[in-house]
Image (tube, rainbow, N blue to C red; front, side, top):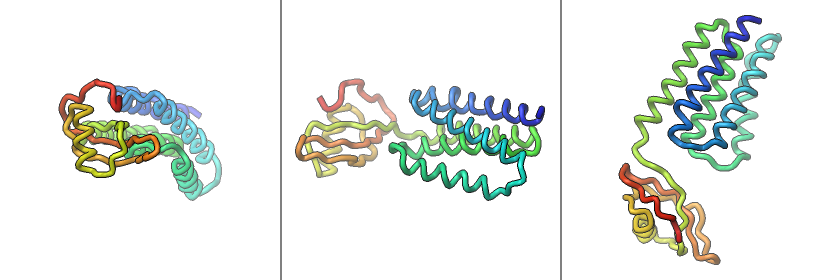
Length: 187
């Protein structure tokens, strides 16, 4: 019982650092903070119960599969957010089934530190969804329009929706590090 509580405390401490210390200050998405914590605590609970029974590791892998299906049915999130979801899931699973608090602590530190370092170091662009006030199919013209609207240099554009009826284009724009204008977009 003491070991389980220690492992749960390690998990919750790691999640506090990951979500409140790394993710939220960078992205300010409170909805995903709740989702990360919910997934983590749910997986921790299930893994703790499974570790106390005579079931095999296949159950844990099945849990990953079920959560992957849920992910496919959920609203679209970025690959970075998928990494945070996976980290939340992995922390819950590791802390739920680890044999010792030292092992759980070491793996938790590794997961949190890896995301903190990789996400900070690899953030070479800022991403923003932009609604352009015209339906533009030509990527070069669209890039120029988004740059004019935002005042930022576009590194990459992905058209999410081209609406010829409403005469709008929804894009996911990645901007090179610089000053991004705070002007309303698509007005």
